[in-house]
Picture 1 (cartoon, one colour):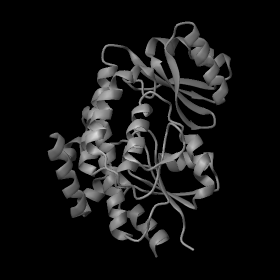
Picture 2 (cartoon, one colour):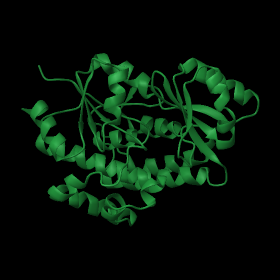
Picture 3 (tube, helix red, strand yellow):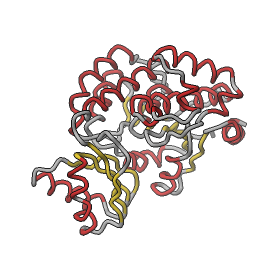
Length: 313
């Protein structure tokens, strides 16, 4: 019996200089994809990704760079294993757009343009405010939520943003408020409250102004064509229509990413997860969320060959 496979994609923070270079150096398909994506948004992706520069960590460029490398990895896998079909697609934050692309609901060049604009809209929403994000380690979700609720009741702007795994929840909001709450999180039992190097506050109310412009772009680009359902970051439930994609990805801007809950919801439905793109962030999370769920990752030619041998032979 063939395995039921989830194709999964990480989000912002998974980027690194040189990601995808092995694909680029050894695949004409990869080079063509880099060129077409670059033409669309006027970016030399080879320079952006393979050389030290400030733009790779600027969200308007980080997002298309990550998505492009993920789509290259996915395309090369599908070239090698055309008969393998996904049971479902799943992404973490930005990765949900890669999942949408892999599902066939948006062309990869359109997706690169879409997330380039998404990053710019997010940056613009936080342009005149000191926004940020903070990782809370060693504290249960309910306690983090309670501290945030108490802070909002006192007039502070801070929200739970990324549910990554038990004992690791990222909060977002005004940087000054986050810094002032460090001792509150530690008093509640957190081992660490670490301010992240972020200039935007993802997945919270501060991004409300980006919602409608993003929805307008998605209306033009997303198609009614889904190879398999996508698991929503917002609801942890699958969707497979253009209408749902637009609504849920618009909501994702201001609602927390429930990655942990999503993996818990689908773990019993799949036999294997394959992570595409740089590194193995989600593979590491999956080990701690659902230890019996096997997760493989494809980030270069060697890992691609290993997964092809394991899955397609």
